[in-house]
Image (cartoon, rainbow, N blue to C red; front, side, top):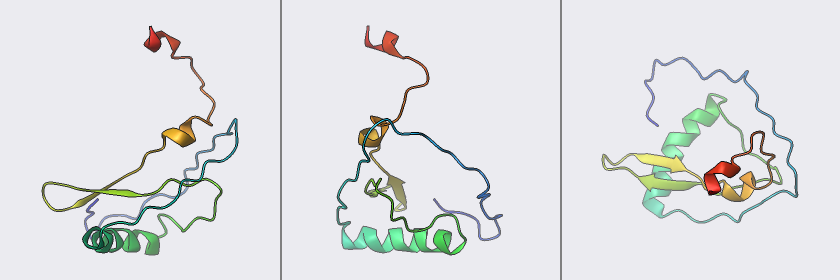
Length: 98
């Protein structure tokens, strides 16, 4: 997640849209341990200030999970499997189940 201070801002002109096939999925938030919360705040606040993301009031939500890396950095991740169940599958992958 570390970026060079002189790096170009992210391009926010790309949009991605998926038509869901079912009701929205909203998972409850889970508290982060205090030491991870501070690191996450330090990483994400500058990105919000640059306009890379904004707080959402969407009916769709997945909690942030912050994983500690070996070097002490924080790796953000999320479990989006419940959300993916509501998205259409463009190509059948039924052969994987065999």
